[in-house]
Amino acid sequence: MSATTELRALRGRGVTGKPENKAAFLFLLPWFLGLFVITLGPMAASLFLSFTDYNLLQPARFSGLDNFTRVLGDERLHQSLKVTFTYVLVSVPLQLALALGLALLLDRGLRGLAFYRSAFYLPSLIGGSVAIAVLWRTVFGADGLFNQGLALIGIDGPGWISEPGTALGTLIVLNVWTFGSPMVIFLAGLRQIPRMYYEAASVDGASRSRQFRSVTLPLLTPIIFFNLVLQIIHAFQSFTQAFVVSSGTGGPADSTLFYSLYLYQRGFGAFDMGYASALAWLLLLIIGAFTAINFWASKYWVFYDD
Amino acid sequence: MTDTLAPALVRSAPPGKPRRRAPGNVRCIVKHAVLILCALVMLYPILWMIVSSLRPEDVIFRDPSLILRDLETGNYAEGWGAFADPFSHYLINSTIVVAGAIIGNLVACSMAAYAFARLEFSGKRLWFGIMLVTIMLPVHVIIVPQYVLFSQFGWVNTFLPLILPKFLATDAFFVFLMVQFIRGIPRELDEAARIDGAGHPRIFAQIILPLMVPALATTAIFTFIWTWNDFFSQLIYLTDPDMYTVPLALRAFVDTQAGTNWGATLAMSVVSLLPVFLLFLFGQRFLLRGIATTGGK
Image (cartoon, rainbow over all chains, first blue to last red):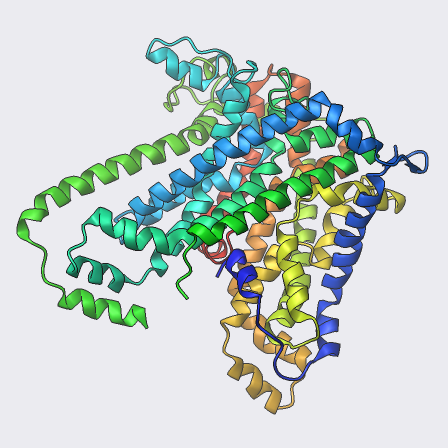
C-alpha cells in the first residue's frame, strides 16, 4: 500500500486495545524531537519570518505584509513561477506516460526483464546528482554529444544549454529521463492485478485493448494517482540540475530559474531571509493546492478495488 | 489467494489457437527491438561519459561514438589533483556525512516505526497522519529558520546539520517503509515473546529488528544514495572548501574551470558516481523492493 492510499484509509480506524503510552513515547522520542525541533518549529518560525525584514545580522524587523505585496510586483519571481510550472506540467506527464508505457511492455514474464528494468531504473538513481548535471552540460553544449549526433544527419544544432529558448527543454529531458522509479512502481502495481481478471475477460471475448481499458487501467489508477502526486511534489522542488547547468544564475536570461533556485538566491545569496521565508510558504501553498486538487479530482477517476 | 488460484485457471484455460503463434513471435521481436532501443538511448549518455573520461581532451567533443581508440588515463590523475585538496579529501568528507546519516536513519526510524506498527497510544492516527504528510513536505519551508538555528549553535561548516536531523527520524519516508515491513511480521512472534516476559525494548531488539533486516538494508542503501547525491543542504551548510563534499567540490571545479578541462571533469564525475553504481549492482534487490512498497525516488 502506498502513502496516498494509506492517507485515504486513515479515516475511520480507531485505536483498539489498551494504550501503551509510555513505551510508545519512548520509542517515538527521537521522532517527536525531530518533528518539533527540526520540522514544525522551523515551519512556525519561517511563517513568522515571512512577515519580517531579516538579514541574519540584525534582529528581524516586523514589516507586515510587505513581503507578500512584494511578491505581486517581483518580475523575477513571476519568471521563476512560469519556468517551474512549465517544467512540472510538461515533464511530469511525459515522464509518467513513458513509465507506464514501458511498464506495460515489460509486464508478464518477459525474457530479459531484469536487464531492461535495471537499464531504465539506473538513471533515476543518479539523475539528481551534480555529476549528471555536469554531464548534461557537456552533452547539450554547443559542440556536445547531442549536436555531434545531429551533425551526423546534417543538422547544425544550437548550444542547447546556452540558448534561452532551449535551456529549460534540456532540463525537462533530464527529468523525463528519470522515469525509472515510477516505472518500477507501475510494474509492482501491474503484478498486483489478479490474473483471473484477465482470464475472465478473455472468456467473455474481450480483446487485448478492451482488457487494457476495462481491467488494467482501472486497477492501475491508484498507482497512477500515487505517482502523479509524488512526481509533481518532487518536480516543484527541483534545484540541483538548474543550479549546476546555469552556474547558480538560473540563466540564460532566467530561462532555468526554478522556484527553489530563486528562493536560494534570495535567502542564501542576498540573505534576504524574510522574503525567502515568504517565498517558501508560497511554495508550500502552491504544492499543497496542487496536491489537494489531485486528491479532490481523484474521486472522479481513481478506482479503489476494496 | 488469487496467487494460488491463478495457475490453476491458466492450466485449465483453452490452448491458444495455432494461427496466432506467428504474429505473436513478430510481436515479441518488435517488443524487444523497442526495448533495446530505449535502453540504449537511456544508457548512452552514461556510457559516453565513461568512455569520454578515458579519451584525450580534443577527442571528447569530436567523437560521439563509444569506441575507445587510444586509452587516456591521464584525465583521472589530473582530475584527482586539480582541486584545492586531493579528491580523496572530498570522498572522505562525503563518506563521513553518509555514514552518520545511515546510522541515524537506521536507529531513529526503526524505533519510530516499531511504535507506529506495534504499539497502541493516544492520538496514534493523528501522529501517523502527520508523519505521512511530512514525507511530502518541501525542505524549503524549514531551511531558513533551520539555518538560523544551526548557525547560532555554530554548526555551519560542520557536518552536524547534515547528520543530526537523521538521528531525529526526519526522513519520514523510511519510517513509513519500516512500518509497512513490520506490519508483515506475524504478531504471534511478539505475543510469544511477551508471554515469556519480554518487554517492548526486548521484543524490538531481539524479535523485530533481526526480522526486518531487509527493510534496514533498503533504508541504508537509499540513505547512502540520497545523501551522497544531496546537493541543496550541503551547499547551504558547507561553505568552507575544506569541508566540501564530493558534489560541492565537483560543482566548484566546473564553475572555476568554466569548461576548459572537460576530460578531468568527466573523470571526476565518473568517480563521484562509482559508489552509486556499485550499490546499484549489489543492492538492486533492496532498492526495487523499497520503491515498490513506498514509491521513493
